[in-house]
Amino acid sequence: MIRQFEKSDIEVMKIIYNCYIRHSVATFDIEPYTLEEMEGKMRTIIDNFPAYVYEMGGEILGFCYASSFRNKPAYVHTAEVTVYLKEGESSKGIGGALYGALIPELKARKFRTLTSLITNPNEASVRLHEKFGFKQKCIMEKIGYKFDKWLDVIYMECQLY
Image (cartoon, rainbow, N blue to C red; front, side, top):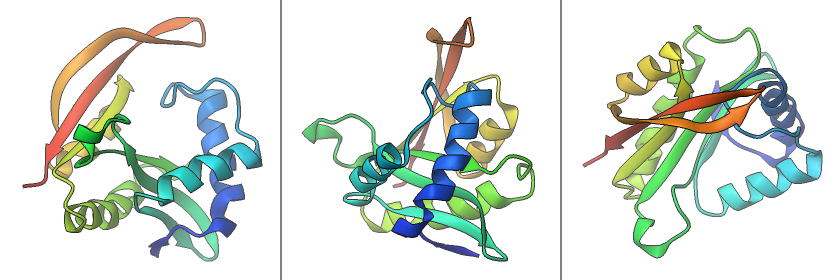
């Protein structure tokens, strides 16, 4: 079941996100978040953007949210979207279900452009975004450094109207 984010979800979201920090290049964060840091991150997000969780049998299996593309007034109609799944839950349709709730809500809130940054390679994430109308615009080469290697990022964009 997809539902809106609630403050009580933060602990599980932190656990899911910290797994990406420790074991993945999907995020360029290096240090795991504390509960207070995750609360601050989500407080900033939900003041202006929607956030959803995917829950099954009382367990959160993933979450998604939108956030500021850049913190400048002219970008007010642009949002960056992201989705994170609990380890072992990919390729089950959860990411698509989450975006199926998030993206129509962003359109209803009159966002025009959605962006997403995907560490290259990540074919599953690229396919997920393409399913929702995102198009690859460029590859930013060697833009991040994590786990002792330089990483490229795919910039994807979706025009909602």
